[in-house]
Image 1 (cartoon, chains in turn red, cyan):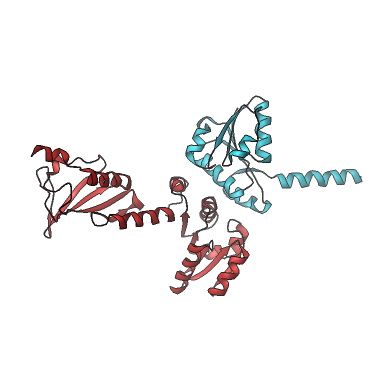
Image 2 (cartoon, chains in turn green, yellow; image 1 turned 60 degrees about the vertical axis):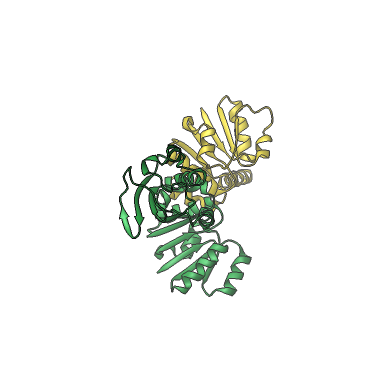
Length: 228
Length: 135
């Protein structure tokens, strides 16, 4: 597989190493001469010192017969332009863009660059996940976060403990899909009661997950408790 | 005409003032507040500070009713990105971008963006002046 990596920063140079180890034929394109020299000392691969948004430079890097191109510079507009060139000018099977500012995710999508990785968002999510992984964890992500499957483990402190499903105050954009209890799947109805050690599976999206977490912290089942 | 100028440097700034003086509705976008302030009090168009290709910023500048968008920053990638967003997301019919690096002209062409190439124009003018004088 012939691949081109554009941008030799921390992400680019690490990606280069990984791809090399997996036996890919990789060419790196990097603007800064000093960075090129440093990487050349470290990794044995072809490096082109030049502007990755220049069609001639990309041709030198072998874009004509590349299978994959990864635009991982620190500038979103640069990554976007590279992917546009790859898409409109060359028949690249796959082009992947790094997005630095999460605000730009929508823009990349709207302009048809659908293979994106937002480094800032990924790191923020990982840290957040570590923070509350004992109560809430993302089991599966669909379509890069538009839909997610979340597992809530019910311990003694859980606000939902002993509540009935119908009494839970949940945001509109979420559905309780199933409850795992002692290895058995329960398809919850309104009168299903939540017990200790239940694993509740919720289908939702990232934005709503934050709301659910807040509810879990501040008592989402107050309503139910008052009834008792 | 409602005209959005992206980039308030030498070209963007001058163009904004001239178009505004000529009676057009002008709004200028730049990420540097200082460059917008440099327009002075005589400029009566709209000044919007922010990332040039951000949809929110473009909406604030009134892109939904823009007749023209001129991408006039000194960064080709920025100009290309703004032009693409204007054309494809906001369906602005007339988008013109400034080419900075002559070798980048092919990228604009590939992506169907209309351009003005100042370097090419100026060298053409200088060349014809020299040749005109020698005749």
